[in-house]
Image (cartoon, rainbow, N blue to C red; front, side):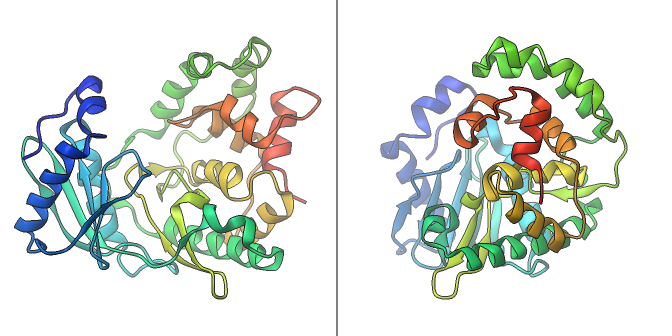
Length: 307
């Protein structure tokens, strides 16, 4: 029912089009024994995702991203019941038609933390970031070995070198000003990132947007979206933490790091920010602001410093 999607042009034409996507999702649900469950597409996310009634979520991956679907299904199955915050339970997963992959998972309860954050009292924010730190500590303690055949990058040192070589052009393409671009090579050369770290299972996008919370007591009720998971240096996960969870609040980051069990140098986290697969420094600057000094070292302290 769903057509082949292999190119960016096909993606742009097909994936947003509910007149194409919904019949395919409905057909797949019928094959999975959920023909009578209503489908509601979630508005966010890079992949098409549907609530299937009140109990299930169906996530679809076109051929161009099929490996992401295989990876997410494997990671979720690996994590089931092992973190202190709930993750979706895998109900079914596998190939559909024309190269598509799917993961049928349980539906987590709660409100998106990013949408709720402005209503969360300060004391509850402090407890929530503590819960995030505790969850990350457990995630990073798990043996990632069983996932080595589906998660990259494989050679972490080669990944660091590759990302470093393309860092200036990546930020230039995002519209970063020349005064910042010219600082990147020397800054990266000054930060000793490990080439062979203890391998950890990384979420890679630890953001408020990927947590659910119960407004009645403000407790975490879910962590989701493991599609871009990797195996690598644990510090890489703290890019999202600093930018999208604590957002430049040094006290919150210190509390989260204490719950996690260790801290990282601000320059190390900014270096990984520049090397992150989805790095967009101009966007982060608009969101978090820029210190008056106008240097990458001052930016590291402003975003990733702790009290």
